[in-house]
Image: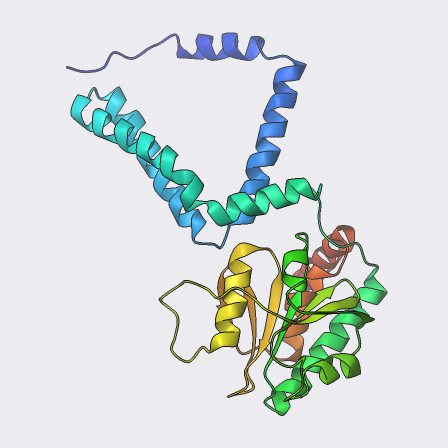
Length: 282
């Protein structure tokens, strides 16, 4: 039996719009901001695949209900109920990250605030360090803190709190010294801790070429928004872990471009993007 069409649909839409007031608009903006922030947190992570699966189930439920497919609707509705129970388990890292942002008052913040000159200087020192470590095939882990504070990670190592320089970082990663094994935590223009222990990833689909350093870098990037620079002890390859993914084979130029946004102010990033697009069009 065909489903009758509602020819009064435009009038119903107009009636609905007419009932919307200023508080409703504010409510919509707040919800949209929260959803956008949540999307930023889960993009390029395994959680985004789960979200897509949920959207498919919800869409199928609506379609089946509209077509009066009672059995399919019943199955999908019960599946949705079970998924709601499972969500806190499936999204445990993302929920933890959101709660930590709220606890630090940073849920809508944009990370460190550093002027462009200082940011360029810090990036140059880190890139210089990574290059020299790569040439000597000295293993290293450098964690660049962004919005989420890494106090729980920094306390597992040795507290330092020194201003970043290439010479300073190279001394930290001297082989067979107490600070060599583990990660160095960088906050703004300071090295706050070294020899820190990072959580290993539980992913089973990684290449056998990746050692403990790379797995630790991926593991931390799955739980927070930090950028982790890894130098391989076997090959000297420079890699960067972010959002649960590992990107490899960086050189000086590409590494600088990758880590620079972690230090530059939001407005400076906007201007850089604007002028880079303008130069590309020219």
